[in-house]
Length: 153
Image 1 (cartoon, rainbow, N blue to C red):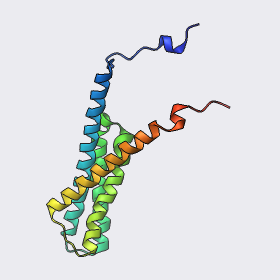
Image 2 (image 1 turned 30 degrees about the vertical axis):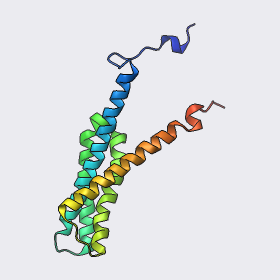
Image 3 (image 1 turned 180 degrees about the horizontal axis):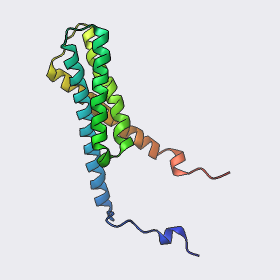
Image 4 (image 1 turned 120 degrees about the vertical axis):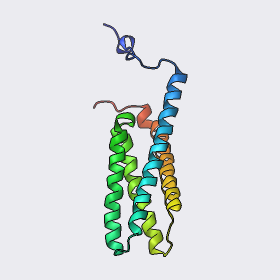
């Protein structure tokens, strides 16, 4: 009987060297950063556009959040084949909800943002979410549960 480790083979086309794996990891990280920043920018710009209408604040907030979340969802579905569905959907949902709310918060305080400011705020929220996700992933990789998997009882 042979052990499981001696029979294990890499799938065809898989990178075999550590530099190739590192390069691939960096490419995916850059893609995640660009995607989360783009989601933040689009969602915030959608909410900024809603605030340009002279409607009731509650109506603008509800319609703007629905439109921003729809834009986020379509973007996440679009990149899911490349970045993965959970990896793209979950963090982008947070960015797609929080960044548009910043425009509403600024509006409540009487600060009307410009389109460029809305894009900058959205990009900042996307970049902050990327940093949070990377930090969280590093913490999970170093956790004792990851190093010592649970044994069946």
